Image (tube, rainbow, N blue to C red):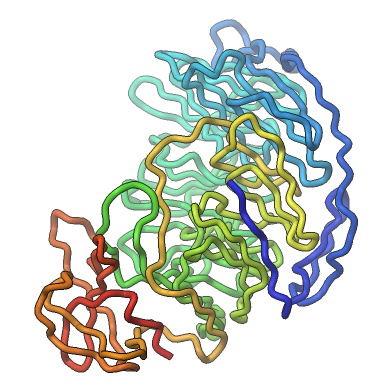
Length: 532
């Protein structure tokens, strides 16, 4: 999939960074974009990672036992053909090398291989009946097999430590597994985990929803703090806030999320829903009047906008119409924000835009199929990792793109600066993406409004507002050029979902449900622009 990076001439390059060593963070409006590209120094190696015995091997039949790693490690230098098709890859922004871990013979199986947030542990399961989990330490190749009934919570891991859920006698206990010693430490917490957990940036603490409570664990000591109880885990989730802000507990029935620091202190007032910037100053909030009914695979019609709000005065700083937040940036994790909080990635009809909180467009990524989902590096400014397993350096207009045997479809940054974890797997079918039916428009400062409206376009006859979303339906009103219309979504009914219906798309185009001058009806989106 080809894509194009464009940078508006009115803005300087985004930022530069020292990829190996100290990181230099600079403003999006300054900085030198002419630094030389990193030199590829990696050498390709092959061979199965050697399994080494832990310091204190577990006894036979114990919960953790030393085993031979089932994974093969290879390293491909920048520009070298990658021959591994299934597994995990770790792409380095410093030298362009790709370190892969795979299960030999896994091309024809459905084995699972995932990494811990810091990329230090690999969690493998053969996905066969009664197959145990095997945890491999990436730095040493040391492998430990978990006994039957024990599963790792890979999101709650750092270094050689990982929380596991051990089921026995009808109960599930949360314990800390130590790959160095091959031991388990009981935390005293029981209850089925509802999530894989989250880990603090420094790796000292982890948080897990288990049973009906929220727990904070000290990974090194096993100490536990109960932060909240009475939680319906079917209607709640935990989300990591970027940087060192902490994490949020989202109870779907509550208007705001509970906000906790990594020390376990709850912040008064909580935090609203949206993508929070790493410095805590901004929150990007998605808006939509509802869904547009359409059918088929591929892109689906959508109307949405993104508003950036300065949290302290609770005032909008910019609004981006005809745009949406990228992927899981809809959560609190803020994956769409750059590490320095000076830029945000949004999704538009033609691909993606890198925008500032002040409402300016800093870079454009043309990708009509919407496969890239660029995610700014949380540690190195100016770098974006894509779901196609590439790293874009916006300051240098440069892309690090390994020669994959098959193009990946998912990638995430690890907490190691400049390292992108890439899922090497054949993509599934049925992927979809939003196709905005109204044009993209950036509005800075005071031009940002809370509820977007539309204006009938000029050019000849008035725009018909019809009784039904059909070209032959009776006309309820004819809107003169400039007439302002608001969205008037309809209730889909109890069996049709929770989102209201804001429109329908058929072969004639996208019909929007609108209200103007006391009249209500359906009109084609092509007859409107955003109202000023």
